[in-house]
Image (tube, rainbow, N blue to C red):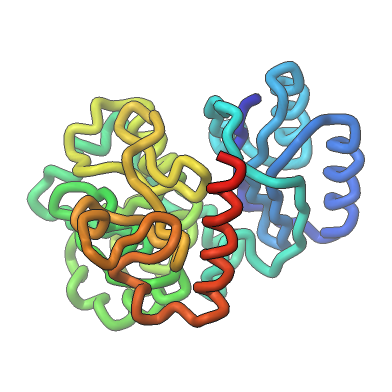
Length: 287
């Protein structure tokens, strides 16, 4: 199978119509994954058989997704998604930034192959737009960590720190590019000269030696993280709190595989502990 990740920002007036079109198309195809539909566009990650790859991509482009916003990766058969879901949402990437489609489309982009040259300029600051747990797994050298738990918090961070970025060029990045397509216009509204890494970290890995990158890149699927070669990384998740773990955290006396880590061992409820114990016993029986 192949994993197809995609997004595009464009106005959708009748959400139910496009939901029905998507449902009808995939009725005849073996598929797993999730697609989000909103008034501002589409965002999805799906796994389909290789034989259906081209037909699926053609359909995705037909319903409005730009070719440049479609990314493919091989699927090795491990658990990825349990089933296929389509959801209608207010936003295809939750932000509460109150941006229009026109504002989103006016973002400034840097091609991945030009990124290294751009970020080494004296007046350029690098800002990560991702969550704190993503930053700790990997980041660009000299990147600023906004230290946010969710993307919603990025708005408050910019409002509180906009004077810090005054009279500077600010280079921003995220995993696949979609969060930056909102972060960039938000920063522009706050008077910040902002430039987005086109296609995000994953496209940067694909097109360059990634010499300015430290660590791995956290991804929201079974791989947990990928290295510079876009292969499955070494990062592991804690099943107690679903946080990615560093080598230091894996060595902690509070880390117990499939149970807890330093981030959550004091906070797990009795119900959560029982659930994790039941799951652990189940895997022992079938392994």
